[in-house]
Figure 1 (tube, rainbow, N blue to C red):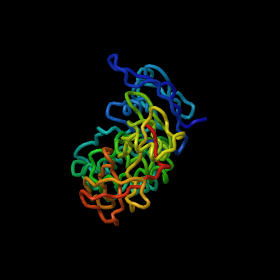
Figure 2: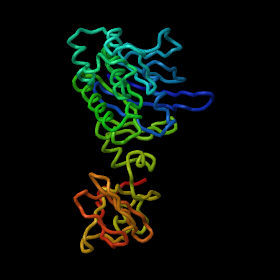
Figure 3: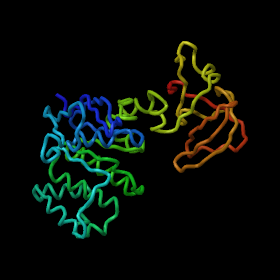
Figure 4: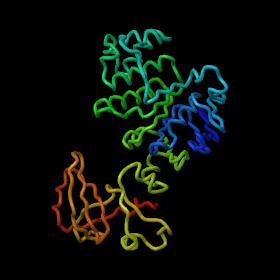
Length: 328
């Protein structure tokens, strides 16, 4: 029995398709990320799972129990499923301890552990209108977790946060899953938010699931250029370069060979697959990117920050990690 089963979910709004036949399962304690462009139906899907919106067709089973939507239930939602919208609100002009006390259904020991995990134990005397966006978000999450849900769903939790607050929230979500043993589904546009965290990534486009799999599968073997582009930069290899690098029997017909920037190397001409001329170099701190042209084929190469950047106009040797080539 699956912890969560989403079967044949479809939804329309004013005759426009929002979701079309969505199917997936989630095991208990599995961390699931939903990715996709704006308007792909991600938020609607989470609301349907939480019982906050009504699907046109299909069903959601949570521990083999049918989740009822607003049309079938007077008070929408499920007590074991917590959903935090990206447009969440907290009561104004109250101290944090008051907001959380009003919601408290647990003992002091659990509450103390929860507040520590959410990194808000030092904020109890502060007023909600005197908090940063990241602090408000963590308090909103703690407020939901007081009810001891089994499944926590977060809609774009990292949007509009600076890097410090974002990293803190990442740690909080990790600890909520690991220490409180709560299953999590989250939506995010940023690949760095999902690739290092999720067990499974579900990629959506125009209301449909395009691809699902492990972060490594999604990143290294994307189904198409849409999925590839969602999770980072990639280079398209010209037919001429492809024939030079890949044996004829391994070339996939009607598809283009692609490679991520980190799977290209600048090497001496003796060990290079081909040569290219440097167009520009950019330093990003922990790594650098060198833009080159191999004939008319533009390529981006990612270098370690320890390596010396080649100069504009310089000719360099390029070697391709051919085992990392994917096809779109």
